[in-house]
Image (cartoon, rainbow, N blue to C red):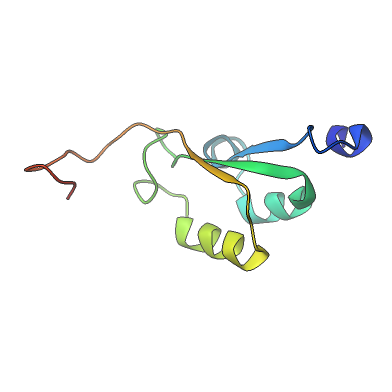
Length: 91
């Protein structure tokens, strides 16, 4: 509501997937509700804010949703690393 009231391309939402899942869930319905105001999607899995596919968030569905909606904004990775690097590469 704040972004709509300000009515400026400089006032947009950073949609934090980790915190949305941790606090409320329903990520895709919540994204849909504020879709026109999202400019940045921050990625981290729950629990623990680790990389995608290490927790309960269904990133396959989320990335499919973003692709189908034609999302062109920023995808930011803010997470710790749970997987250990092995012989110069990730498992």
